[in-house]
Structure formats: structure tokens, C-alpha cells
Image (cartoon, rainbow, N blue to C red; front, side, top):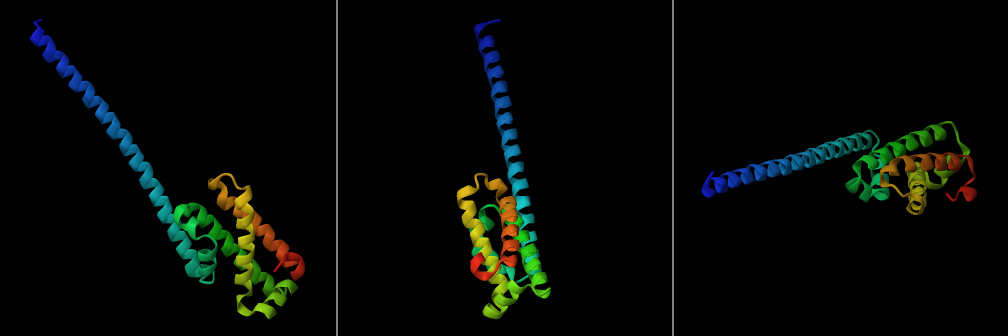
Length: 166
């Protein structure tokens, strides 16, 4: 083999290696793109679910916008869990009021029709404030909020106004 043939062969092998490397880079980029698309689809599904909940319970719109505006934009999947908890909380409070819960009846007499919405907001803000100091993993935001929020609502509906802070 002459020097010129050897040089052509090495050049050809180098091109093959470079081609293989660039194909590998492209494949990993495609995997990232697929992951981004999956996250985008999950985000869209969360936005749709949130929209449906708010459409079915319009009272929640201002509560959600006041309580978790940044979470809606940055972590829609966690926001969906929070909105579900708010919706369950709203229905829980409405049922308790219908049963004649004395704490809620008093609140409705004092605040009128906004009593349930105000209780949701106050309780939600207290839970969010608590979470600022105690939550360390954003992926647990929804679960952490839900547990604390539900417990706070139960306490608020079984405790007199001065003791619960409402």
C-alpha cells in the first residue's frame, strides 16, 4: 500500500467515525425532544383538566388565580393536584354548610355568599405559607398541599372562629 492509498483510507475511516458520532448526537437530541414533547403533552393535559374543573365550579377561578398563579405556569401537573384539592374542599364545605355546620353558618351570616370562597382562600394561603418553610421537593407540592389543606379545612369547620383564625 502506498502512502497516498493509506492517507485516503485513513481519511475515509475518519469520515465514517465522524458520521457515527454525529448520528449518535442527533439520536440523543431526538430523545430529549421526545421527553420535552411528553412533558408538553402532560402540561397540556393538566391545563385542560384544570380548565374543566374551573368550568364546572366557576367559584374556584379567583381562588386558583389568587393562590397559585406561578404554580399554574411553572408546574401545571402539581397545580392540577392543588386545583383538585380546592374543588374537593369547596364541595366539602358546601356539604357541611348544607348539614348546618355552626361554624360555616356563622361565617355565611357574617360574610355572605363569599364565605366558602374566603375560607378556601384563607386556608389555602395558610397551607402555602407553611409549605414555604417545610417543602423541599417541588414534585411533592400537590400531595403536600392536599394533605395539609384537607386537615386545615376539617379543623376550621370544627373549631370556633376565634380559635381557628377565620
